[in-house]
Amino acid sequence: MNKPGGNSAPGGILSTGLFSEAFLADPFPLFAQLRSKGAVVALPVPSGSGTSSFWMVTQLEEAIQVLKNQLFTVDPSTIPLDDNQPSSPRGLGGLGGILGQSMIAVDEPDHRRLRSLVSKAFTPKYIQSLRPGIQKIADDLLDRVQEQGHMDLVNEYAFPLPINVISNMLGVPSEGQALIREWSELFSSGGAARQDPSRLMITQTFAEYLLKIIAEKRAHPQDDLISQLVQIEEAGDRLDEGELLSMIALLIFAGHETTSNLIGNGMLMLFDYPAQMQRLRADPSLVPAAVEEFLRYNGPVLAPAPRYATADVTLGGQQIRKGDTILTMLGSANRDEAQFTQPEELDIARSLNRHVAFGQGIHVCLGAPLARLEGDIAFTTLLRRLPALRLAVARDAITWRGGFVLRGISSLPVAF
Image 1 (cartoon, rainbow, N blue to C red):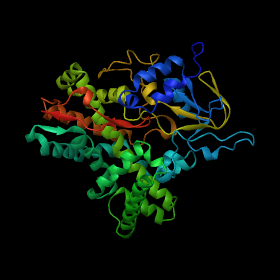
Image 2: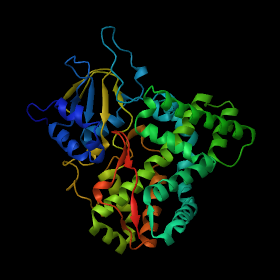
Image 3: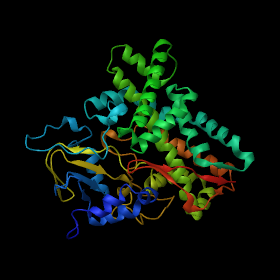
Image 4: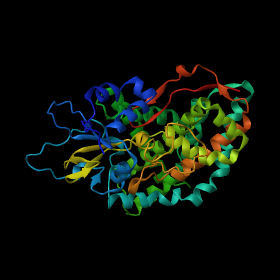
């Protein structure tokens, strides 16, 4: 139930907080304030109309409702608005551009047909078959730095591990990883949606690079996922050129960006909670549970793609109008005091951990089994091979990148 007078968040909290450096460094105090206002709070609209068409979902049950209920769509173009109803602003992030025809940007039935094309490559059984290869990547990365006694854990381990895994799966050459990272950082910060010539150039260059790979796989198919997708398209199935480009871009981005942030954020959590790190070193069997807790406590995704109401509906005691935009704040829902015991504390052995870090419903993260496996291997290998691992800079020197959708550490200098 909303507190008296708490059915909308003060404009100052959101207008100064949601896009600030302080929020990027630590969004959780703001999330706690918003949860105290209610499960669903209104976002002020710059137009000054006095009515809000933006809403933020802050609590777990309502977050699950939005993510699973088909009344809320990821594609606003499918909503026929009344003649006298203004269209909602889309300034807080749509999915146009290079990801605009991917499965995260569409609902049923298109979502099902797109997802079915890649789902076999992400089954738990197949993902487990990748364990030896992922373990070798992790060991090779540590072999390069172990003798020097220090490294940037983000840039020399957390980033290259998942980008090598997904590149191998897709058949993307290693020399393209710098361009992939440049575009990924642009997208995760929201910059890909800005009409800035330099930003548009990065996206265009990335798209042209992917189209070149597609052409090469079409001419010379190999045993990789891009070749499989191209062959399906060639057989006259369901992928056109735009869908193929969007699908590959999504798999590259989602296949490394979130896992990289999971590894970096997770290690920082262990530095912040040394007793938890000691417990994990003493009992490595806790690593899978620790990964789940890292995802809950400070996961890589603060919010998924916005949803749009397809009809008037009541949500969390609020009247949502058709066409309104809903931001589902997973980072807040995962610390819901009504759902988690001591949610503001990190507990690597937490048993009841119904987090929504991977989303819910039809858009639940396809790569969740892969992310869990990579996290398991990454943390187990670090703690086993680097028993003296420690933070090499002051805690307040850590900087963050991303925005209110994706969030990760820019650099994490460590010594061992």
